[in-house]
Length: 317
Image (tube, rainbow, N blue to C red; front, side):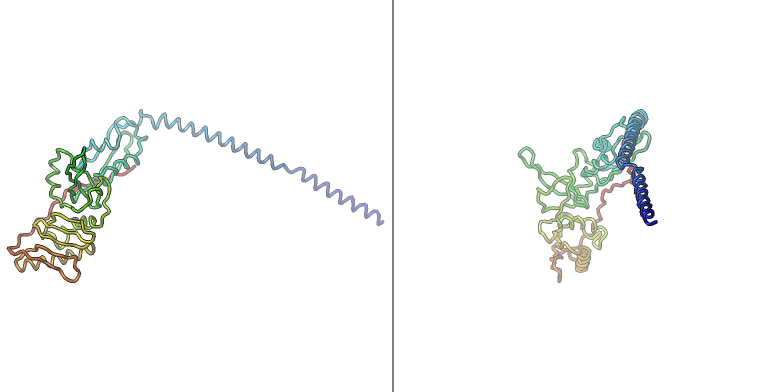
């Protein structure tokens, strides 16, 4: 009958609602999952902390203990000119008995390369007891005569410049072996005395061109034809060169290779005429004003022999 069908359908709907509610009640609450995750994280943190402390203790007891890796030998390259192995060891601040694994090689390399006479340093750790230090010195190619204040009086001194315009200190007292080699270097003049700071690079474009001229002249067309005595960089756009025979040459700051070729052409013309160059202005683009000096041309000057240092290329390990 119709009333039975209606009553059965309502009973069926009630049964479905009860089943849905029962299914919902069987699902775990989200708060339990959070608690479980926190417990896992705490346990993992405790395990990692314990393992880290154990490793630190093992490292301090075994690896960083002087019983196994005590420094016994320090090797410093001996092909040094400016510096001595004793100075290198003092700047490196390492001594026999230090733990080899505990040494900061980056710190040693950085401290050595802060020395004005050092261009590059390499430090190598050789287990179990050896430290190797290799230093490449800067090579001076020019000198600068200046003065410095000492207790209210001005004292003359001589600084040196390398190819990168790095200012290097005067020679130490008693280095007669270097005095003979370095006093013949070309002199750069016209600099502000306040700009000369040991360990700093000179930013002047004129100084850069003058040092480049010193470096390339032995390989240029003027090789063996003239030697450099002094280079004046007081003018902003010109380098005034005085050769070892007294000739004055004005060079611009651009196209140095071309200017050296022009200088050689004038030099050859002077040789053909039996004259010598007294004054030459190569800063002019359309011509070359020149002042001759009569007399027999002098024989070419022998090229200077620069003092060089070598670098063994030690590794930094």
